[in-house]
Image 1 (cartoon, helix red, strand yellow):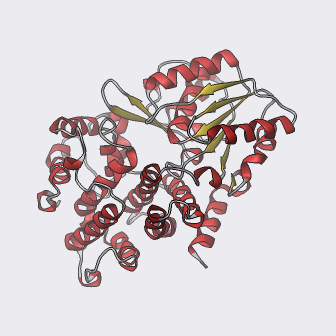
Image 2 (cartoon, rainbow, N blue to C red):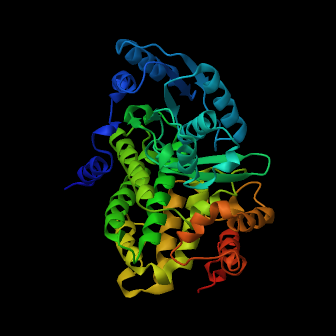
Image 3 (cartoon, rainbow, N blue to C red):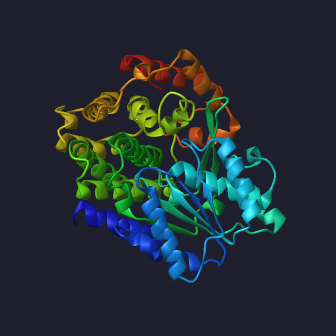
Length: 422
């Protein structure tokens, strides 16, 4: 079975018939919306070529016998709080019985959180953490409005998942809602929307997809769901490693772009089975210096070295993926523990170099030591403790400076020897 067939099988296993995906499916959105309500509102991104896709959505909704009750501008990168509050206010005024989002992860995440505020009230900080939206739904007796999430980028998998990332731009810190209640009722992904995406955006999204698979894989070692996570991660990471360089070389390669769509959706599957950890946790404190995908791509090789003694089965699965792609010539079978982790980390660095990505925090414009301090402080915040708990080497607030601090210093300079082994 090819990687593509494996990916399709896994996605059907994940979402069944509730997920409308593949090239050309946007014209069928109307039937999905009509199955959920009669008064839809569209929250939309604007990007080159987006108007034609939005018109396809409007026509499809009209053919289903409905009309949009309104359109709302989507969110900026990293879903700023101000955009979230604006979207919540506009949804409240328009009073939809079904919400459609059309955008990348930021607009979909902001729409998830905006509906929480619109229906449940309170402050957004009331919902950061795990399961707090569900608690509020049960306590209030209210029901969240059905959400049709139309993904426009091969990236976060936000259309498939229980996560909503929201950023306080004034502090440069991202926080997270983790709750089954915010999973979109009907996800949609027309792969053709991604075909014209800039290579920078494409690379950011693809490396975010790797981060989802990779971090969940690391956290699953030794746990009952490891075999399933390994199956998802092996296909998802393999597709990115094999096809991202193809897109970098030829942005019009539709087969390769389709591979990245499948891979990043598998990243969404992975984070519904398990959770991300080190790379994502640190990325939340780097929103003002780089994109999320790049932050994860920079950090995960260093966390790979730190976690290496605890994740050897995962590293042995990853080795052939990177070796077959020509990203390492190390004798991986002869290595173990930290040495194996360092070899895999070097292969990850090589992939980043080939697509023009940085490999050190120090390579990022505007990065300072203050970002390291911010990341260490954020890691001690109880609202982000799920990331610490997902680590294959769990850390506590008392051990963050001792062990995470050296990982961040290594990432600043590129010196793997600074990482302290537990």
